[in-house]
Every structure is written in structure tokens, then in C-alpha cells.
Image 1 (cartoon, rainbow, N blue to C red):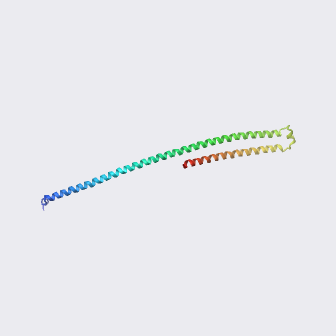
Image 2: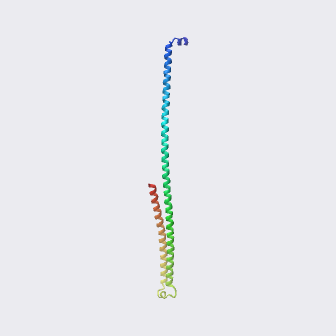
Image 3: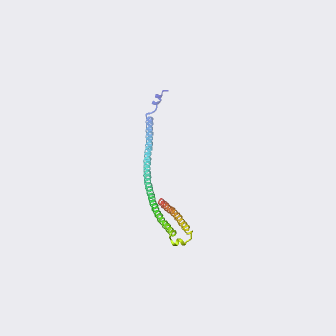
Length: 174
């Protein structure tokens, strides 16, 4: 059988119905495709807006974090400068105390020499062990003074370091 004969056997109305069905199917397919495109576009717009909002929030949080970090660093630097000033002041005070102790030691030694100087009637009346006792007393005084100076320097340094540590901790905790 001839395929053209078969096609000509179909009535024109049937062709019209087939054409209408193809047109309707095409219109439905286009509408579905268009609706998907519109939906995709709406989703993309919403996603872009959410991403822009999240980026703005992240930038704001980062700026706040940077400001807080800068504040903490500046506070720590100020505490360090203050501690260095206190250490320098303690060092100056220790130096002044050392100078004062040295003058006192010199006066003590001069007094001890004057007690044992020849021609001193009081020294002539004293026993022979008197010069040794005054020298021993001067030596003990010098050692005690040196030890006290070292202990005071250590105590000053520890106090200043502890205070700086507390201030640093408090500055970072707030």
C-alpha cells in the first residue's frame, strides 16, 4: 500500500484536529518551559539577595572584630608602656637606694676606722679583738644590705609583672 494514499484517506477534519493537538501541545510545552525559566529567575534573584545580605553581615562583623582587635592591641601596648615606665622607676629607686646604702657603708667604715685609729685613747683602752669585731660588723652589714637590695629588686619586678598581667587579663576579658 502507498503511504500517500493512506494520508489522503484521512479526512481534512482529522488533519485539523491533529494540527490543533500539536499546537496545544506546543503551547503547553512552551508554557511549562517559560514557567520553569521564571521560577529559576525568581530563585536566582532571591539567592543573590540572600548572598548580598550575608556578605554585608559578614563585612560588618569583620569590621567590628577588627575594631575590637585594634582596641585590645592598643590596650596591651599601653599596659606594656606603663609597666616599662614602672620598671624604670623601680630601677631608679633601687639605684638611689644603692647609692644611699653605699654612703651609709662608707660612713660606717669611717666610724669603725676612727674607733681603732692610733692615738685614740678609747681605742687604746679597748681589747685587741675590737678592730676585728668592727670589721666583721661592717662586712655583715654590707652583705645584709646587698641581699636586701637584690630581694627588693626581685620583689619590685615581680609586683610590676603581676600587675601588668592582671591588667592585660582584665583588658582582654571585657
